[in-house]
Amino acid sequence: MPRIAICAPARSITHADAAAVRALAQTVPGVALSFHPQCFLEAGHFAGSDAQRLAAFIECANDPSFDAVWFARGGYGSNRIAAAAMGQLGAAARAKAYLGYSDTGYMLGALARAGIGRQVHAPMPGDIRRAGGAEAVLRSMRWLAGDRTGEEPARDGHPRAAFNLTTLAMLCGTPLMPDLAGHVVMVEEVSEHLYAVDRLFFHLTAQLSGIAGLRLGRISEVPENDVPFGADAVAIARDWCGRSAIPYLGRADIGHDIANRIVPFGP
Amino acid sequence: MPRIAICAPARSITHADAAAVRALAQTVPGVALSFHPQCFLEAGHFAGSDAQRLAAFIECANDPSFDAVWFARGGYGSNRIAAAAMGQLGAAARAKAYLGYSDTGYMLGALARAGIGRQVHAPMPGDIRRAGGAEAVLRSMRWLAGDRTGEEPARDGHPRAAFNLTTLAMLCGTPLMPDLAGHVVMVEEVSEHLYAVDRLFFHLTAQLSGIAGLRLGRISEVPENDVPFGADAVAIARDWCGRSAIPYLGRADIGHDIANRIVPFGP
Image 1 (cartoon, rainbow over the protein chains, first blue to last red):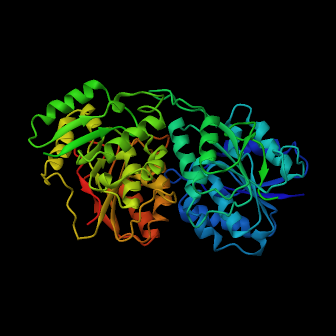
Image 2: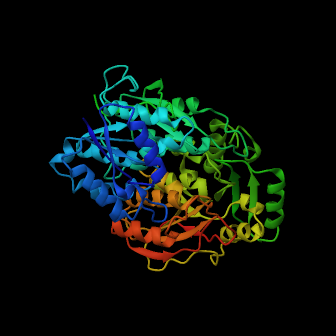
C-alpha cells in the first residue's frame, strides 16, 4: 500500500482540513496518509518558518518508508525553501513521486531540474476547501493508488509539464528552473487581471522558445478592471506564442478548481 | 528652448489631463510641449493599438525637432511594442532624453540596452491626476528645462537605474533587459501584496547578482491580505539581497506618488 507523506512548503492547512481528507482516504483502498505536524503551523503568511517548512519537507522526502510526498496547499512560500531543499535530498527522495500545483510548482520545478523523483501536477489536500473539492482530492488519491484515469492525456508523445503561470514565470532565470526543451508546457492562472496575464506571457514566452508547444489551462476568477482588456486569454496566449514561434496547442483541462486534472511531468 | 514630444506607449490620457499639464508648462520657462494625438486614443486597455502606439513613439523619437520624448502615462502595454520600436530608431532618436516610469520602464530598459539616448526615471503627465500631482509633473518639466534639483542623488558615483519592481522583474531574461552590472538599482512598487513583492524579489535578485547594490523605493498601497505577511518591505528586500550577495543600500525617494524623484540612468 503506498504511504503518502503530507507537508506544507507554502501555507498551512487546518486539522479540520486534514480530518476531512483522512475521511476521504478511507474510501480509496490502497493509500495511507501521514500528515506531518508542520502542516498546521502558522508563522505570518506561512505554515511555519522557512526552517520549519524546509525541515519537514526534507524529513518526508528522505524517509524511505514513504512512497510519495503530497504538498498540502499552495498560497505562497515554496520558492523560499526550494533551493536549500535540493541540496539535502538523499537516495530515498529519488524513489518518490511529488504531487502538488500552484505555488508548490516551485518545488516540482526544482525537483525536475535536479532530476529527483517524479513530479506531478495534481490537486492537493487544501482543495478540500472548495465546493465539491472532494472530487479533486480523490483524483489525486486515486492516482496515488494506481488509477490513471484522472490524468490529462498527453496528445502527442512529448514530455509534459504543468505550472501556474505566475509560478513558471517567476521560476524563469532562477537556479530552480527546469529544462523544458521539447516539452508540452501547460499553464493556468487564477485571480489575475488580463493585463497581468498578458505581461506574464510576455515574460514567459521570451524564455520558452525551445518547448514543443504550449497548452492553456483555465484563467479563472479574473478581476474586473476599469477598462475591458480587449482580448481574451486564448488570444493572449496565441499572440505571445506566435511572437516567440512557440506552437500554441490549444486548451488543457487544468486550473485552480475541482476539475483540475493530473499531469505527471516527463514522458 | 527644449521641445518635448509626448506619446503614450501604454495607457491613454485625456484632453483634460493634457490641458492641465499645458497650463503648468506656462509656468516653466524653457519647455515647449507637443502632445501627440495618439495620447488620446483608446483601444481596449491601451492608448490605441500596438501599431498606433508604436508608430507614434517612432515618429516622436525620430523627429530631429524634439529634444526629449516624455511618456504620458504607465498602466500596461509598453512591453508589447518596445522590441519592435528599437529596430526603427534613427540618428535623431540617439540625441534625445526619454522620461517616464512604471510600465514605461520597459521602454527605458529597452533603450538602455540598445544604448539609445538618455533614459530617465521621472514623473509623467498622467501624474497630474494625483492629489497634488502638479508638483510631480513640474519636477519633470523643470528637469527638462535644465533644473537638476528634482533628482534623487547618486550617493557613490555608481551608474544608476530605477524601475518599478514588477517591470524590472518582467524585463529579466527578455531581449529588452539592459545590462545593469555595476549599477545601483532602485525599485519601487504599488498595489501589490507583500507576498507578491517577496516573490518578485526572489525572481529579480536571482538575476541581478552583478549589480553594485539595491535601493528600495516606496512599496505603497499594499492591499490587505487574509493574514499579515510577517515581514515588511525593507526586511523582504534585505532578505533577498542577502541571499544573492547583493549589497542592500537603503531607501530611495521614488515611488508611485507625487514625491517620486528623478533618476537619470547611467553615471
